Amino acid sequence: MTQAVNSSEQFVYEICRKSFFPLWSYVNPQGKTPGKELCDILVVCDPHIVVISVKQVELKKSRNTSVNHDRWERKAVEASTKQIRGAIRWLDQSGHVVQKDGSPGLALPPLNRRVYHRIAVAFGGEREVSICGHCESGGEFFHVLDEKSFFVLLRHLDTITDFVQYLEEKGRFLSKASVIINGGEESLLAWYLHNGCEFPSKPGFVIIEDDLWHGVSQKPEFQAKLERDKLSYVWDNLIEVFGTELCDRKNHSGPDIAQSELILRVLARENRFARRLLGIAFRDFLELSRARRARSRCFQSISGVGYVFFTYDSNSTLEQRRHELLGRCFASLCQFTACSTVIGIAINTPGSPPKDGSSMDLAILHTDDGVWPAEFLEKARFLRDELGFFKKPNSTHMQEEDEYPMIGKKRA
Image (tube, rainbow, N blue to C red; front, side, top):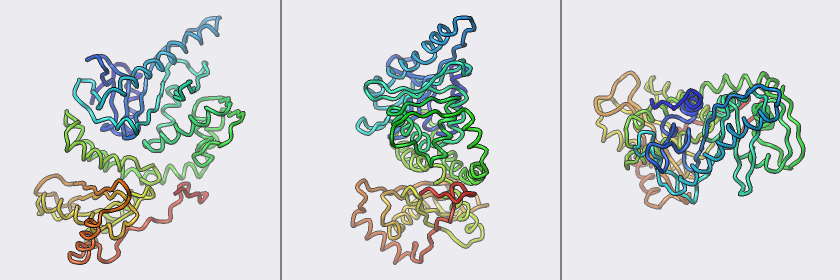
C-alpha cells in the first residue's frame, strides 16, 4: 500500500480508502512537475473529484489568543485552500490521474461533467479555533473540517454517493443561510440526518447546539440503522474483491481497466441503504445457490440499476461462463424494461473452486438514452424463449426494509 508523507495525511487517506476503496483513492498524486504532489488525497469516481488538502499545525498558546488563532487559520486553512485551487487548475488541463510514483492512474471524467469537491482537513486547532466552510466569489465551496469531524462524517456517510450528497446539500445551505455551529461539523451532520438527509430550503439564521450529535447518534432508531447496515457490507466486499485485482496492476489506464472500473463504479455509486438491500438480495441468492435451488436471479436496485446474479459450474471454461453471464444480462431486459444499466455478477458454485480463470466475473449492458436498441430486445426475447433464461419470473424482490427500522422511516 502507498504510504503518505506524514501521519496526518495517512490518517485521512486510510479513511478515504476504507470509504471509497483503493481503486478510486490516491495519496500524494503528482501534479505538473514530476515528483511534486498535486494535493494530499484525491478521490476520483466519475463524475465526482474530491480534492483534499491536509495540514498539521499546532496552535500556539500565549496571551494573544486572537493573533494565535489568525496565524493558525492562515497556515492550516488558507494554505489548504490555495493548494486546492492550484490542484483544480492543473486537473482541468489533465486527462488522467498521475500516481505518486509517476505511473498513470484512472482517467478523469470529461470536463463537461466533472463535479469538484474541495476539502481542507486542519489538524492541531484543538477545537479552540472556529472553522467553517465558505463559498468564494466564483461559487466554489470549500469544506473545512478537523480530524474528528472528518472521521465522523466518513463513518456515517461512507459511500461516495452519500458523502457528496451531504457536501452538495451543505454547500447550498451554508451559501444562503447564517449558521452558528457550537461544536464540530458532526452537529451539522446530526441535523442533516435527523431531517431526512436534507437541510432547510429557505435561508435563515440558525444556531446548532453542540449536544445535537450525541442526542441524535444515541437514538434507538439510529443505532438500529447501524446494526442493519452491517448487511450492506456484503456489497462492499464484492467491490473490494474485484477492485483489488485492478489495484494490483501498476498502470490503471488500459482499455480492460477502464471497462472493469466502469462496472465497479456502478456498484460503488450505490448508497448505503441501497447496498443494504443489495447485500440482503445477494446473500439470499447465495443461500438458494448452495441449496441447488437457483442458478440465477434478477434484482433491481432503488438506484434504478438492474443486477443479474449467476453461479456457474466449476468445470465450465472462462469463455463459456462469460458468454452465459452476458446472455442472462440480455435476457433480463425483458424484466428490466425501465433500466438503462444492467450489471452481471457471476461466481462459481459455492464450495467448488473453478478450474479455469477466477472465481468471479462481471458484465455490463448500458444505454445512454434509456432506450434499448431493437436488436437488444430481440436478442433478449430469444434468450428467454429459446434458452429459458428468466422465462419464469424469478426476480429477487426488494424486501420491506426500513432505513431506520424502529421508526418505520423509508427512503427510496
